Amino acid sequence: MSNRLINWFKFASPATFYPLAGKMIPWFVALSVLFGIAGLYLGMFVAPTDFQQGEGYRIIFIHVPASWMSMFIYLVMAFWAALGLAFNTRLSGMMATALAPTGALMAFLSLWTGALWGKPMWGTWWVWDARLTSELILLFLYIGFIALQSAIDDPRRADKAGAVLALVGVVNIPIIYFSVKWWNTLHQGASVSLTKSPSMAVTMLWAMLLVALCFWMYTIAVALARARNIMLERERHTEWVRALLAQPKP
Amino acid sequence: MLSLFFAIVGRDLKLALRRQADLVSALFFFIIVVSLFPLGVGPEMDMLRKMAPGILWVAALLATMLTLPRLFGDDYRDGTLEQLVLAPQPLPVTVLGKMAAHWLTSGLPLTLLAPVLGLQFDLSAEGLMVLTLALLVGTPSLSAIGAIGAALTLGLRGGGVLVSLLVLPLYIPVLIFGAGAVDAAVSGLGFEAHLSLLGALLAGSLFFAPWATAAALKISLE
Image (cartoon, rainbow over all chains, first blue to last red; front, side):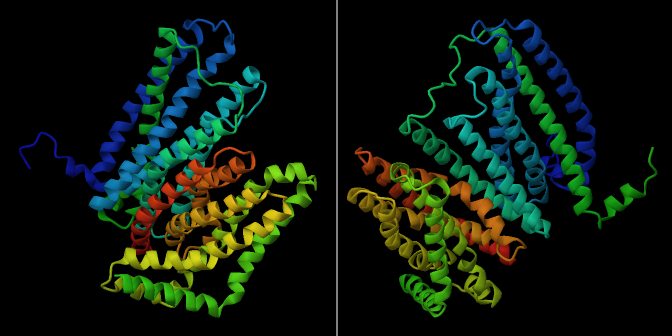
């Protein structure tokens, strides 16, 4: 073990991960701001105006990355949950707990920007389209996860119960998605199609990717910060937290 | 293993039959919710006929959900559940037995009652038949998926509201295909695909849910 370059297991302990996370957060914040400025500049000023939708389409640069993140964060959460159940590591559960609010935020942001975009383009805030509906259900799943964890007082039980729920949810997400999709086609739902013009300008794609990277970095930074708080709260009886808190603030 | 399964089913049925008020109140909840809809949306038969599958299915979902807390709740309070978990017999089989008993006391009565309520909505004969079939195939999945939620929220404050928050999103596929089958039958389209999908959901949930529930029970009883 000792001849490895980095011993990953070392950072599975809150006592060693806490300072590491503290060192990492400023970097991710800086990267997030950098990517955000670049992506929004490219999206708002460089990308060409859409000949059908005018300037209003530019909300896509928030909407699409937020939707991507909302789905991806659930997967990451389920990954940490599975890791926590399999190896019984404390940190995994903390990471899953720390990610959930950001995932819910992204799902909400995606629905909100979608509504703002839908009003001028389709003339309605909401349609029962397959994607909108499944995004809404994803938000419900996040809220269920957060509600379950906050209802359980014992943090270890909260972690494990949340992990089982996250795994059940991740198995169900494809089923829910396809059932909603088929439901929508069977009902001959709204005639509005969400499919965008096939040839997207390269600058638009870049802007979207940059904003997505910005959201990634933001998510990592926020999740780490939240995980640090959870660590302090749960480990408050341990030596290292006492030592940390006893230190005079610089 | 089979004897364990039947022993659990028999025991839970016997307990449920001694508390008939619980069974009947869930059924009356179902009837009342279904009867509220015409009062809310108006008595036009054309509209009611169109809404009937959805109303009946949503009411069935809610009624099933209301009965979930008693799936493990009583056994948890008097310590039986702990003994069942400690027993050398495999826990998923025990859980499967409890799910079966739960379905026999909640899903099956709903299924038998639904055609009568469907008559109030002027569903056609074929529609009633498909409604019953769909409920027969769909409600066991509701018991199975619901058991996961019931096990996770065992002994928590606000467990009843919490279980709905966890379980209702997971019920959505069953709702879609269940109501879709009746819809398709009423509008003269083929309903077999919907029933097949409900069957697939049932197979999947019967296979996976006992394991997930067993894991959740162990966590809740730690």
